Image (cartoon, rainbow, N blue to C red; front, side, top):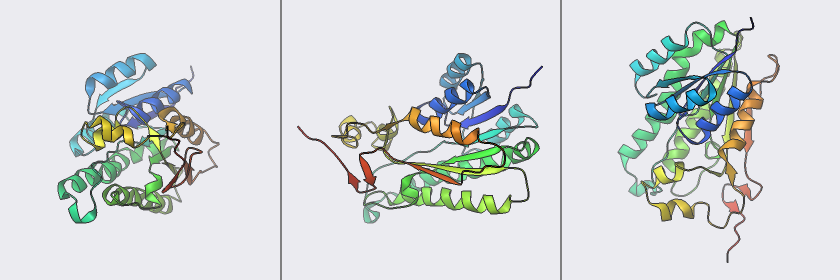
Length: 248
């Protein structure tokens, strides 16, 4: 009997993580859907014949429980869990917002990778870190989030160097403007008007399924092929500050 490949997706309760879990399941992976909202990952796991795991990537003991659930081999780890808070200038930024972003976006990536690396080595697996175009550029009001995504890029590149003698691929997907149901809403703490303004006038921003499709492609390349980084933007976004918006 053929053994199914396995994948872990963090932040799988919504958005890019949820879409990625579905894509990987369609590609034949048994997906461990990991996120804090247990009811959501349980429902998703039932839908895709995977395993739902309540997991907070900022909590080391929670990550260790995830690693125990996964066991000795893992083919793909998608470090997707991430969050953004606010759009304050550096002079007005709230340190606790920056700490919260760093804990999820950077420390969460570290803890999941460290805990699951032995299983990935055992399976000659693939790590896919979800970064951002803000890991390559900056913009006013986005320093805290951009700093975390610059860090994710640095972690990805360093890890690739450190694992060069082991059978593990290390990749980064860097999305530009992606419209999901919750990301901007969380960023602006439930203010729907401010969240909606992020995408105002943009006819076709990316959606979660676009990024999930790219992650599925990266994860299923031949073992000798490493996609170091893949930057994805909607056609309307030529650069971080250059977005075509149609008004009226």
